[in-house]
Length: 332
Ligand code: AQP
Image (cartoon, rainbow, N blue to C red; front, top):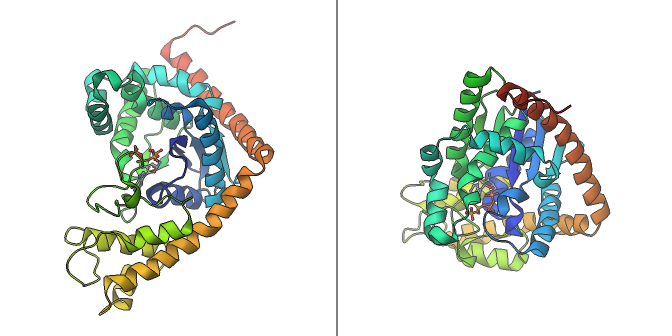
């Protein structure tokens, strides 16, 4: 079976609709056909200062949400990144294979560091993509299900895999991004020209999956559309309506043409009211399942311990091979 690896930061507290439709939904689908490794990437989340107690709680919360979304620990290996020390060890090797200029060109770093200023930007934010490359390579990953915003980091991963293979001898498959055209970028409800994002969206622009269902419905109903009234999928011309149609279509399985036909001659109000119901019906059981997992931390921690053990066994073998190829003297 081909391998997939992906990660999600525990930073968020609640996942948002973009995380789910862009990434986590694909994780659930791919565990059926692939050997899947999914991680709550807590190491990644401290590039920006975090309250320790909150980080710990949010790590469990992220794992609970993944399980509630359908990640099945019998099918996929679910683990916390910091439980597998090989990630940081591999990361150093990747850093030494990455050019300073190459890392400086990462747009996510440029955007985030511009916002935080030089003194507010940690070196960890700069080396974040190297850690992500390490995450992926450790599992000999073939495919990486992520949102569009991760494409550049995936491109870097491919380059590093090739560079390692060329310098030290063939070891890593060159991983492919698994980014869906339809849902790779879910847009902010208030500004449908930018992605829905934890750090940049306003509270009205982002649907948090653990929000009160009523609050979710209200946000959908007040989504920004346009001054026209026609319900048509046209991302360039009508980004707001198109974004709503994407969410509607993905959550219900109805095709976009089918939805365009259903709402022909009806106003945006009808579309929003129905979509609010669709999303509410999805988030309500999701919230309940998340609470159930959180209510049983022993079971949750047990799943994560088992996942870490499995991940560690694969990662340790890869790291040993990497260390050997790089030329480190084995410890006796
Ligand atoms: N708007 C989005 N549309 C589609 N996919 C998205 N992803 C994030 N936003 C969208 C994908 O979700 C996965 C997890 O991302 P993360 O670990 O970076 O989580 P986050 O911090 O909650 O994501 P944000 O909102 O994007 O945070 P900011 O903007 O603050 O960095 C990834 O696969 C990502 O592509």
